[in-house]
Length: 296
Image 1 (cartoon, rainbow, N blue to C red):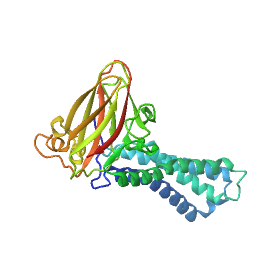
Image 2: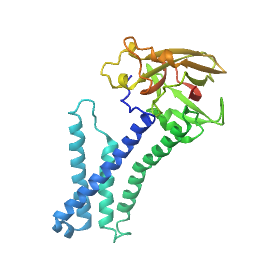
Image 3: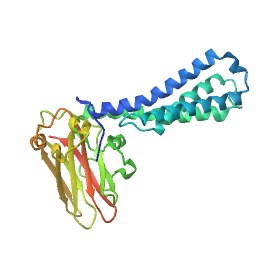
Image 4: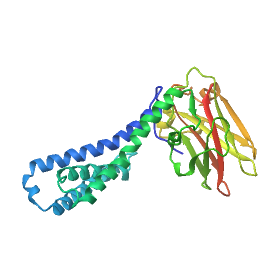
């Protein structure tokens, strides 16, 4: 299982998440400015019918987006991103909407598409900013799920995550985690402060609502491990815990144990990258609840 590299410091991977979201707004801005320059240096293009302008510019945006994303496949570790392409189209649509603003009714679909697509892409930026502020203010609490934004601190598989009040260890909410029958079904708490220096242990509470015990695996890694091409099992913290049915179980892991987990080095406790919770080879989907993840 692989997770991308994260930034260090108190903001940890939260800073990385924010930069990823801001990157999308960069796509919007670049293509907005690109359209502006095109229209500035092609004055005759404005004389074409509005429908022809819109069609040609959108086709040019599609061609440019496919070329850019295709070039990413030539760079190791880079892949085409649909969201980046959506940002390109948002920038183009915004500019087209701007220059055709005198036709609010006739070109209403254009204006609506520009507004809706841009709003969808920019909304996560504000969520990231707000959640980062909450995470820093509430540290050493890593997540207790009292705000709906805390679900976004997990990377990937968010459709299987849900803030819940059904089973709660403390406060009013916990996080419902759904696991699949994949060989390794994983939820990675990634966008959290990464500087754990000065604390003695990490605490988490887990509830198994099923009728059978569940073995939950926990993996903790630092930035160096996350960025390594060959992520050796012996270069990170690995453990497993048996969760009995129908009751809460608290997990308390000494940070000294985490620091000394790599075989040939010390884990950098100022650059923790992620905490992964996963189950292996389950015969059927299962659900667990997690709450009160904090440093002590």
